[in-house]
Image (cartoon, rainbow, N blue to C red; front, side):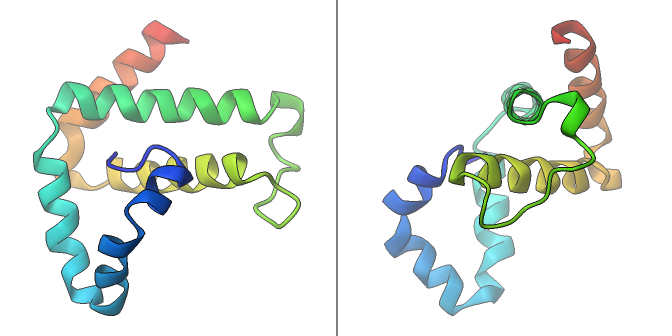
Length: 109
């Protein structure tokens, strides 16, 4: 949620380098970031990511797409974010947000 584009990561590279050097700080940093967003904002950002992924990958090509060097940075970043959100939503503690995402997906799609 904190880094909606790969450019936003580049802008925070120095800060993220510290997390890279000390992976044990990842969970603390992630939880801190998540606490800054309401469930509504989290759900909206996740649904937007899934919509972005859908627009990046046509339905007739969905099973043929892979994450490789031939993909644009935008497509790679969108695939990665959607993958992370998918597994994060499956965690039992995220059922409320998952329900909100499902309702918004139905409304927007």
